[in-house]
Amino acid sequence: MIFSEYMSAWLYGENGYYASYKNIGKEGDFYTAVSTSKFFGGTIAKHIISLVDEGFLEKEGVVCEIGAHHGYFLADVLEFIYTLRPKLLETLKFVIIERFDALQEFQANYFKESFGDAVSLTHYKSLDELKCENAFFIANEIFDAFTCELYYKGKTARVDSHNVEFDDINDWVDEKAKKYHKDRGEIAVGYEEFAKQMSLACPKFEFMSFDYGEMMARPDFSLRVYTKHTVIPFFDETIKREELFAKSDLTYDVTFAHVKDAYEEAGVKFIEFKAQMVALVNMGILELLEMLKENVEERIYKQELEKVKMLILPQFLGERFKMIRFRQEKK
Image 1 (cartoon, rainbow, N blue to C red):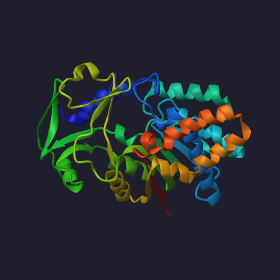
Image 2 (image 1 turned 120 degrees about the horizontal axis):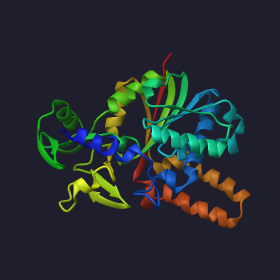
Image 3 (image 1 turned 45 degrees about the vertical axis):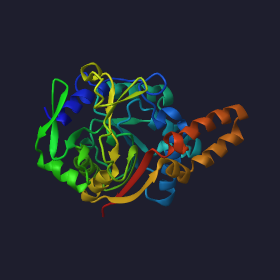
């Protein structure tokens, strides 16, 4: 099979890694910004309020997370909206795009336990099902979870019994590799269709996403396995892929130029690309910390400060992770 089919089975098959609930954070295989600090969601809440204040997002607009897994991120956003602008919880509509029924159920239960009847959450399996007039879309670590093809000097990979061989010719992959100046590495599959679906779902929206990678393609393979906070290069000769298959995360660095091109081809305007550190500071994470400092005891403030440092300091998540933002305004 081609590599993208193999990766799809690994991550999204009936017994794939993402098909069921997984712990994220200390007890899981990896950390995310969401599992690090509630102030990640809080900063997005502050940004959503600024979009309402500037008139881009209507008070009756949709706030939609794509690929929510636990639902903790959107719940954190709602918690801070309640603190900063509680009236908006009565008017905004909250949506999660989640393909797996088991995760939808977990998310619905979590929201019910957290907010009771104060918040209404709607699920869709894909962007194709969502039709709205005005929205803010948010995603954390979604583009690295798209399947990819592996490319090496003009050949694409096929997989047989977990063994990878570069012996196939794929014109589309070859074209993308040349466009992004790769002679080897990962070529993501599905960005173009995803951008088109979002463009058709809503005539006026902003989309913000956080992920690890760079604007330009890295010059080598970045594909790797995460298991119990251990990172294993996919081409490490000592690993047994058949033992890791569907039991661990499989991911790679995002080439953001490919994301940007996909959205611009769909007619969506590119706004900005920044390190997570810069993006969160610009959106007001430090102001939120100051508000916390004024309202809680010093011990709690210091605990939250240390978590926020993980989000923004360059040696942790601040520089490695990037934010990319787009807007569409169809008349």
